[in-house]
Length: 467
Image (cartoon, rainbow, N blue to C red; front, side):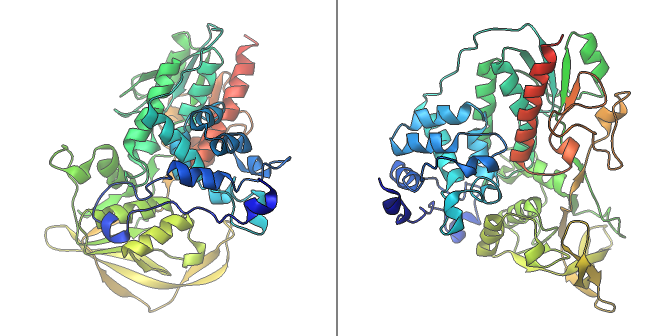
């Protein structure tokens, strides 16, 4: 098909549950492409001689290559093509911010809607899973070298998948009772079904990756002890799982959660299905979530689905400064989430039983930009007001957990507690110790963590060849 004809094809919208349907269930919001829709969207790709879309992909997917296979109706081949460089296509197709990465650098984006690369990646990953034709590539040569990966989030899973395909023996040590890290505890079912994460993890197991669960490195076993056991390299992908708080009066009242606890209870422990699952969660009628990122969007939409009459986002800047993906903000607005912009709490109010009943808040106005490039919120004197709430979720970011750095002598960290590592190789201050993902950069995206894992895998392979 000629380029002129391709340009006439509009971007294919993925079908979704209606807002009225989805706000009372935990099923996935987008319903996925049909084969017909996927092929029609694939026809929009111009198959550029210099595919700039690949410049925006941290895991180096051959984007025109897999899209051409979709156009040719070789959906299984397209899945294999993606898996040459990315072991987590079903995950990345759902939660990566393609609009700021591969789709942003798509040639079409200059004058038209970019090719829906993320939707197409999701389609082929789901097709492969549904058709049961997942092929496990044969690993030609084993090196006999052993690598320990601490943490099974996107960075850890990516480095494990790449290294095992290079012939190394890889064992992943995961603190929690399920593998996946933030993919299983942090992202809700309606955005990323846990069955999809489980399928991706199972693929890695079939590749030969060993995964040890409920294994807190730094407590039951140190990094030094892993070396003593015969591992030549340790990769640290422990993420940023220590919640931040505002440190305002009343923060310890009942009904106030960190986003980590609220999301972990609901997502990993399936509190939304209590009592069919063991873990309960308090279902408030007036739920306020503090923050403006994807985590805040996830938490407030969970609150709505748990039965809240009013579910609020309380954010100290304006909508324009919100770091959440536009699609997540849009979905929240459609579902009836109420936004309180330019607002910050300064104090929590309780009843005599110690449960939160309200927040004293201040109105804000935007001043000069701060270090993040966003305009700094400035309190408006005398603008205090009370917001009635019975549940508050604090989603203002996370810090790095200190367990591994504190138990690993010679491992350098910065003032925020993040491990200092070369961003191109993952090499830390300790010989044989590499790190990547949120533990290095602070809270970021799934795909950036996966990209860090990919870079570290190459560097680790090169390092192992010197031993």
